[in-house]
Length: 467
Image 1: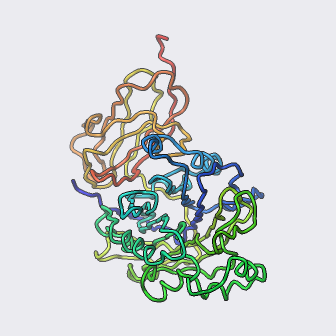
Image 2: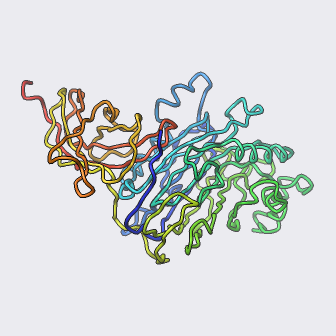
C-alpha cells in the first residue's frame, strides 16, 4: 500500500501551544474536579492551548476486564472529556495498556492539518511479559511537523535504578512506527516524555524520609535534587540523555498519604513524576526548531493517590514551508515569524459538496472531490458523525471508501483544474438517527496510520417520510 505524501501549498503558522499533564491515579476514581489539573481557571478571556496531552498511570484495571477496558471509556477519560468537550476540543487518539493511558486532544480548528496519527506500546513488567509497567505513545504530524508523546510507568523502588535504565532503553529500542521518516521515537521533530518514571534519590544519599521532608519544608530543593537519580543517569548518558527537563521548583511528588497532603514515611520522598522533552532543532533548512517551556509545576490539591500530578505548558516552533515533503528531501521554506500563532486555515484534501437532507433508515448519497494526488488505500473510510462530535472514535456508522464510492463523469475526463468527482453511498443510516450530522473522510494505511482529510458541512437527517 502506498503512503500519501503530506504537501502544503500554503504556509503553516509559527507557534503551537501544548499542555501536558501526568498523574499516577493509584486506581482511584476522579472524585475531584480536574480543572486545576488542566490549569483551567474559567476566567473571562482565558486562552487555551492548541493541544492537551494527558498521561495517566495506574488507572483501575483488572486482568479479567482487559477486553472491556479497550471497548469502553474509563472514568478518567470521561471526566476529562466532560471538561474539554465544552472548550472546543476533539480527542484525536487514546491508547491504553492496562493501567497506562495516554490521550491527545486538539482544538477543532486544527483537525484538518493533523496527519499520520499512530500509537504504539511496550510492556516492560515481568521482563516484557506483562503491561503493569511499560510505555504507550502517540505520534502525529501537525502542519507537517512531527511530534511523539510518550507516557511511561517504569520499575519502582530506590534500589531498582538499573531496571529503570533498562526500561528506558527497551522502550526506545522496541517502539516502531510506520511513518518512514519517523520510525523511531527519537526521529521525530519533537518528543515529549512524561509519566511516573519512578526515579528516586540516590541510594548513597543517606537520609531518612523524615530528614528529607524537613529539607523540603525548608525549601532546600536544589540540594536534594543534586541526588536525584534521573539527573544522575542523564548526566552519565545512561538514560534520557537526549532529553531536557526544566529546573524543578516544586516539592517531591511521592509518596503521600492518600487523602492528605502529608508525606507517607514508608518511602523516601522523591520526584517520581516528570515531563521531559527532546527537539531535533536542525531537521529543516533555514529554520531552527525550539521549545519554550512556559510552566512546570505540581498540583498539590489532588489527594486521590500517593502521587501528585505534574504539568508542563509549552510553545513549540512550527516551520512555515511553501511545500513540506518527507525529511531528507529538499525543502523550500519561508521565513518563520517567531511570535505568529496558528491561523484558522484548514487544508481540505477531500472536499464534500453540500449534502442535502438525508433520511434515517435509508440509503443516502453524497459527493466529493480529492484536491491532492494521493493514493487511496483499501482501508480509507468515511464516517458519519454528529455535527459537534468530540472524538474521532464517535462515528455513528462508516463505510470503506473502496466499497461505497464510484467515480462520477460529469464533464469528461478529470483535469488539474477539475478533479474527479466521486459519489459515496451510505447504505443504511441507523434508525432514529435524527438531527445534524457530518461526513468525515479518513485516510488509513494497513498499519493503522490515520489522517483526517476532509469534513463535510453539517446536514440534517430527518424521519423517513413513510413513518
